[in-house]
Length: 93
View 1 (cartoon, rainbow, N blue to C red):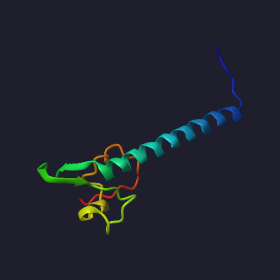
View 2 (view 1 turned 180 degrees about the vertical axis):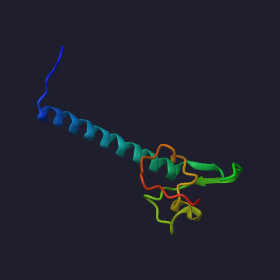
View 3 (view 1 turned 90 degrees about the vertical axis):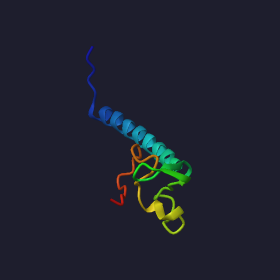
View 4 (view 1 turned 120 degrees about the horizontal axis):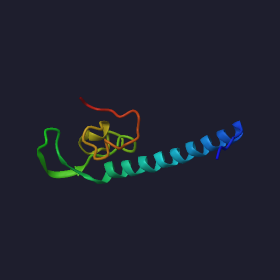
């Protein structure tokens, strides 16, 4: 069966998909921020175990002045780095 849609119907479908995608992206960003602020980082840059693990902290919510050891300026060891939807990640290397 073939359906013919008007331009308005196509636009309505596309807008609904965009809104749903934006909502999902916002939810994922919130989860990533929570992960960065609460999950302790247990391994350093070289893969060595950290004796006293602390959360990395997210650069979107924590100023570098209040972060633990200033790590929030960068996304290097963030536990959510690979799935975080933030487009402007900052890496130290």
